[in-house]
Image 1 (cartoon, rainbow, N blue to C red):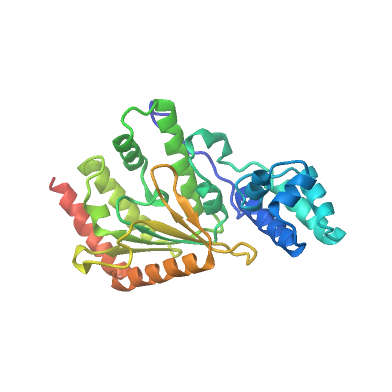
Image 2: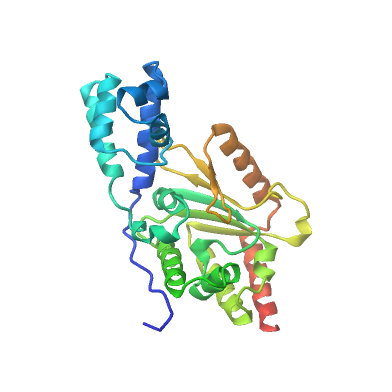
Length: 295
């Protein structure tokens, strides 16, 4: 291995993710509690725990042990067949995802949701999406934001980022649709050599049948996503509603309300319509690749 370089881990294929199971379990427990006419405070008092813990379990922020879930299901008088299904979900939610050993460098739950997604639609106005980044581009991007980052943490961040990319090449690949602002192509992150290699990788990924890349040209002017980058995450199972992730320096926020997700669907449709077609986008990417040759 070349000194200072991160070696990506092999990511297991499949849609399983304890993060998504935890979210689904929490939603079911909240539904059952509300159907029983109990408040979070009443459940907390009955189970001798805080209302905040019950709230965090219901929102999927933390997991719950099968024993705690069983006690809650007894309190809510859930019939045995349904109770056993939820207990198995609680057990599955406690399994470890491949990314969990890197928890110290992950600031949110995005990777866990991404691993279980059937498709992701993303708009980026500043940088290349993580699923498309080369190692050197990722390294340059991280160092630009944190010049004092320890080498071990830098390598772990890159290792996770590269490992995530197997979602695009596994047997049952993620369907990925990205709209990139032209500024993403123009900004020479890492210098001309890094950008040429990065744009070459984008073009290669764009030729995959399950990947769509569109570029939003400067000449489009104002558009529906002027507020910033976002990703819409879609899951195959109807029990797992779509969600929107908005990246931030501290990890980002999730929007899960149906009306919020609907709004972002409309925003993405607006972007898709004014962006260049995939074929035209490839031509513009190639043009910018040539421009970086001249720098």
